[in-house]
Image: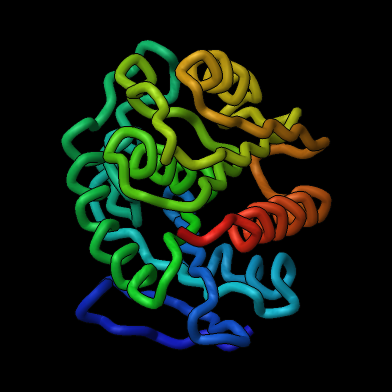
Length: 230
């Protein structure tokens, strides 16, 4: 993978990129998990997309105190107050970060088609919020071992709502697989398309999962290319 630091004016915290074969190829923005960094998921690009059909972008989250870790400073897309169903959520932090990500997504989409947005764990939750709550136009959402933030406030789907690829480990003890089940039970009646995938893994990624992501990305890209022009 050819990683470069790209456009600090767009994302000053740091941004790794991998170009595609074509400069107008669709873009994919991937958000890392809590306490990780832009390097954490960068290997996805070459594994999922060996043919260079997509432009890949891996931003760093800002450094901030996180209540879940007793106020310790770490890279986080928003504050996390707790992991149980009764924990309060950082609605303001989610909203503010979605507005910041919109600038990056506009930069990625500047060359053409709407970008694909995804992430692992907190990054996946941030992706879901940005696409579903904030309504930023994306081609699809990749929710990898994630959860649905502010689940009681998710708006109904529209004709432009993106499909969601949701992958989760059956042995995940950080965010148990029930988080995926609950999300699907909320999103499907609201009209969202959710493709659920379970894997024999803990709170991590696996090869089978990434191969399924590869198939999903090619499918939605092929469908988009087959749409009649108006």
